Image (cartoon, each protein chain N blue to C red):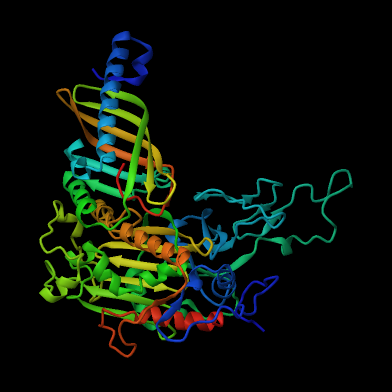
Length: 172
Length: 423
């Protein structure tokens, strides 16, 4: 029987299951962010299942049911191709990244998956420029549970910062 | 009678100050056209408010009566709205009363537009429909008796729709859009906008810290395409070994970069590979579906990037279809509004194919990142360094249009620009 966030008000056992899941998701987020901040983009696909979907969608498109992605990956192969391009072929200015992930809410837990929402904030710092907010929005995630480990099965990043500052180089 | 300026401007700048003189030499471009606020002001008047058709959006963005979007003509915020009879109107997003920019949503559906400050109300054609307390209260106050509602509508642009594309102009005395584009550009345009209904997939938006003309230049510049972009060269989308055509319209305003992608990988000679650092002979994709080409165009070219003067680009590349609206935001910044679309007849698989392929373009696309970064670096150089001229010397104007290593189209654009600007 799946535990959902509505159940949080009813039984202490369910509440404990959701809290345990939130802790697991938060640990996942921190490792994911640390990896991007270290610049190890080639390891980014390792956080996903082989059949994962990953999309970065502008808030106004999401609200209007328009499917266009700023980034739109179906399957790990497309994630690997983006990681390869960013590491080896793309031309862009060097930058430091800080990816803040917070306000994680676990919405549902079952034997195989955790469904959660979190807020993200990507800060970028370029040479001779002040730090700036580059992307802010919400993750809508489904995690695959494999033993103690989590992998992203579906991540939709909906960003409020619809008018992008020049371009989004690295994924969130 | 009509000087080509459209709306009357209170203090027209008849000429630029004498310190701004174009340097001698056809292929030289002075820095100050990208940075000087006086040049920028005159461009708004002569180019965006002048005798030109401005792109404002696609009909598939406003498919139903009452649908509207925010858009821009030059720097001027406008609303593009479809009325009850299905006609598309373009009017200034500025209340006739005190000047409030009243439409605050990217898109929506409305019966009418009500300014939030004093509730002046406009219909879907931009005509003034209601003024609260027009007669005052108890016989006192209110608008003057002679106030004519018909004279106080929103400023309305002349509109034409062509193959699902909406254009607007401040100039009443202007040729048809087909004559404006000319037959050669129309032919390429009609391959992208093939006369069937379009389906909007979504909009990308970004600001870019560069002068608006740099984006027109970028898509008139086949030289950079072969050098900067690994995806174009390595996978044969646009590369020196392709059969290509660099279209320049006779007046120098519009243009196109067309190319025919080879079956399989491009066969680039060793000598050319040495010059093209972006070319990666051994690069393979984990998911090659992204580059699949579903045949859908009646054209020898697999890709065409069109520049339509002054504020539009239209692209088909493999199965990617998009337009870009260039919005100037001061001499040193532009905003880009990308409309990405498919055909109404696309099935679910084709839509997903287009969505996957669109990873190549847009402000997080494999090409988009590189272009936006390169143009930012360019404006940084123009804005902050000691003045000097830029060079666009490659190729000869008399060479045939299959010449790739050329800046012929950029030179042609600036010949036209200098005429319009009196430079």
